[in-house]
Picture 1: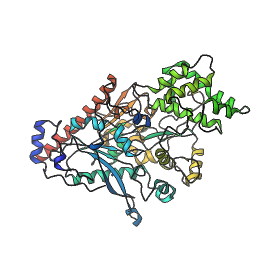
Picture 2: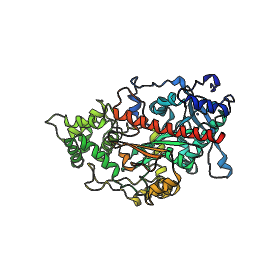
Picture 3: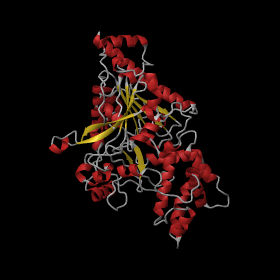
Picture 4: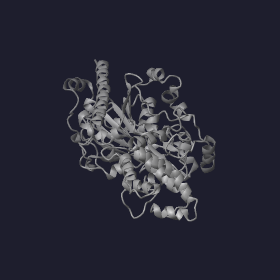
Length: 534
């Protein structure tokens, strides 16, 4: 594997000339050292990636390394010192170098293989030249090639090893990798900006939304000595401990469809009862299987309803230009033949969203790796509840009567807890996130503004109101340096996606604001650095 060398570093393109002169005078100019060999999105993003992007992805610009990562950062038993190979990827094409303390942009990987992130998360790539920034992408433990002690399947079947699959360990992983990288690049004075999106969002058959979530925010709060600032896109930091109403996620999905088309909303709302009615008749499931062209015969009406639930939520969450999936689904439903019934219209919505297929696979929305990571698969058993949500990340998402266009399905903590105990042998800790990361979440009760003003700074919360997760996001400025950027038409992590020549004006403006805020953080850092040395 090729190493990063001084010859591969380009001259800085963004740092002000005068500031560069001052910095060069007192920052060590030692040559870069060799880095030892080490290692946010939906599948639609990867399928639709095109050359219309402003800065196209070039695989040759990225180099893969592996770091010997500590299994347990918070215990000193002998087994805690076990290590595993954690993958991270570096792009130094635009980096100004350590001799001028050029910044480092670090993307904190989420619930998938890192390769997809590098392609679909364009914010770092699009702005690296402007900032003369080094790009770093770090894979999350238990995903991709960063799996402790062998295969993911074996790791997740081991009850002891599963205990190391949590957000605190992941944040400590990122801290170790970043400090290691700075040391080997002699870049101790280079400021780091961490970036990340809401980590996932898989909605299972019971209506639970699973999110590891907001790692960039939590990293800034837990490791302020490492990260100068955090850019958290679509981070639902208030969706824990019943701070946000449990029906909020589905209420936003409903709003999105209602805004797109009242008739579409009405059709979806009455379809659930119609599915139940047909399923209850003789040969009803067989009839539904033919009507919806399922790849496998339906065994229960819930399979069809779960598929539709996921389709509508996916369309709303990733309601991105220029396609706008909610409008696509509703155009399909509203444009169905007039002589068709309610279920004909619903099927037309499926075809409009996914395209025509010989049959429709109800597990197509997420990769098998994502599902295995979020849901532990034990031998021949069906995919079970996410282990992590059964331990620390309890997010009470449900639907009440007449609250949404979906059937009622309220969140019941006892039922959820019993399932976790049965499946994993653990009881959920619903208050742990607000205890461990308390300043941000629990402080909403104690006046979030005052608490965060005392200990928080340099965080961007960006949200698009078409994104169901925005219901649990920070939508108002907390202070001068903890800011909320909200777009009415924005969707899940849209601002992290690669910039396109066809982007709407409001999206371009949002990204420009984010860049300006990050620029001010870095400039202030350089000014402080200069004053400390002179």
